[in-house]
Amino acid sequence: MAKKSSEVWVFVEQRSGKPADVSFELLSKGKKLADTLNGVLKAVVIGHKMQKVAQETFRFGAREVLLVDHPDLEVYQTLPYSRIMSELVDKHRPRIVLYGATFIGRDIAPRVASFTLSGLTADCTDLQISDVTYTRKEYKDLLLQIRPAFGGNIIATIITPDNPVQMATVREGVMEMLPLSSPAKGKVTNIPYQKNEVDGLIKIIERHHEENKINLKAAPVIIAGGYGMGTRARFDSLYRLADVIGGEVAGSRAAVDAGFVKHERQVGQTGVTVRPKLYIACGISGAIQHRAGMQESKKIIAINTDPDAPIFDICHYGIVGDAVDVVNKFIDAYKHKLK
Amino acid sequence: MKPNSIVLVKQVPDTANISGQVMRPDGTVNRAKLPAIFNPEDKVALELALQIKDKYGGSVRVLTMGPPKASELLRECLYMGADEAYLVTDRRFAAADTLATSYVLSAAIEKLGNYDLILGGRQAIDGDTAQVGPQTAEKLGIPQVTYAEQIVSVKKNSVVIKRKIDGGYEILESALPVLITVIKDAATPRPFKARRIMAYKNAKSLLELERMTESNSLLYINDLKEEYVSDGLYISTFTMDELDVERERCGLAGSPTKVHKVESVVLAGNEHDKIEATKEGLSQLVEKLMQDHILG
Image (cartoon, rainbow over all chains, first blue to last red; front, side, top):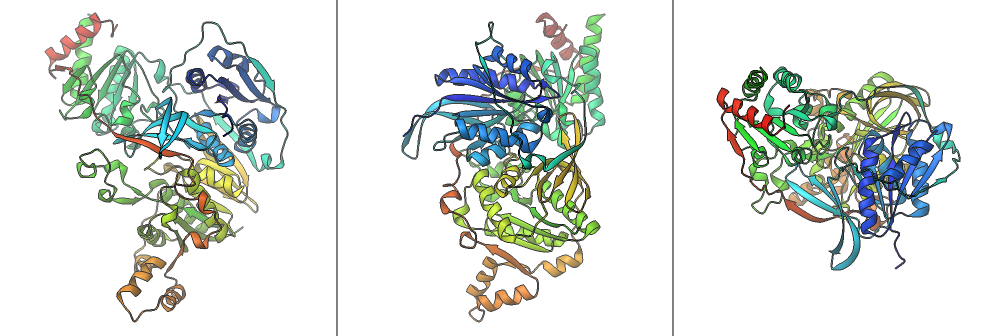
């Protein structure tokens, strides 16, 4: 068998020229994977006026940037971006390719995986390298793609044993961003953009977006509500607590699905992963997908009417009771202490 | 323009309502105990296709790949207003990952032919991958628009779509044919029509007709099928033999990703401090958090 590549690639996503945090998080993880494989970390940057972004990837361990820079590529478009990425992957056959599980990453990754016949696993919560025995065959240095599945009742480890390229998407915040003290020595390889007629099949008529104002990852305290909050109105007390102690309000997926709180505030496997100093879980049962997004918080307070809720198994302080009542008492106690 | 739409639908286990019975003592999932439902975003996609037909004319066909039982889902599509239903079923397609699934779906779509729009939910609730739509589009060599929240208009050779992006939206005009995946907010599925339930409750797939002939020696499958086709009650059924596919690219064999290990979730059951939900209890907790500099 031909020697497999040991290159780890990260698709660096940009919005209006600004690189996404998740891409740097993935570069940090990619560096560890590349080190384990004795391989090289490379970044793929597509856009316009991206030289600065390309340089920034060296701070996270990239040794080479494959840069496709052209005015036509200023904003993400499915067809040219996926075609460029597919051609690069097809030509170089990296061992691993990582994408953020964002609107863009979830649009481009499956198309590239289909074109290159690669394996692709969505929303991984952990990635590791390991030798694996599968159907009585030995495989060296496979990527273990770990994710909760089936309503969170099981954790599945997915592998791509026989195809050369293993791809995965990862949500923002799941991996830690670890800038190097001194940037890696890297080179930028410019790849010319050759326009193709299929690139123009979709035209952008209008585009409107704002920077996400809610930054859950940076909040020192997060007060999260779950389906157990019952109504959107009962979230008001959580916002009040957030104002008083200086934090952000978040929600579980069930709370988002029920319309209690907006998606950009969702914590968990399909939302954001957070590591605040204090996480207060209100009316959250504690499904694995939710825990995946908050269990590394420094201190966790769980408030739930059900004393058997799984959230109590991972908290530091557990309170059995009605969330709104407890939160109101918490606010009073805090104000009293400040006096 | 009277667009011909094909809607990709999937019957999924109701993962949002997993009860104790569903988990076996060894931690594995007993799928048989889970109720099977219409994947919510696929239902929204069908609604959008029906709205397009209401406005512009054209046709709506629905297509699913799944076990024989998935014909239940196709009948529901007929109750809502789909013109024709297609079932792709074969044991050799089982255990497919998203790549092998999209390969077979694209072959079935090619077989149906004559399409302008392919619609489907953004993702299915049993896997949440959102991969089958884009992969099917790639296999068909057509553009894709994911996260669609509105079909703005259908023009002569194009469609205008509003889609969600990070922190906002964009409005795109795509050439036809195009594959569109839709999010939950895009539409509210219409209820089943009583008249259509009466008309289509007896719609049957080939497998269901075969079962009828097994229990009644007076029935012959070819005659029976012909009768159902002429009554508009036949759910067209494709197995691997009817599709232009290579066996090694289907099912488990055609899936680059494999499940290596499945573990049930075991909670460590860590000890924690129990705080009383009283004024005193919370006062002590706040004090402790301040001492530890968790709260300022």
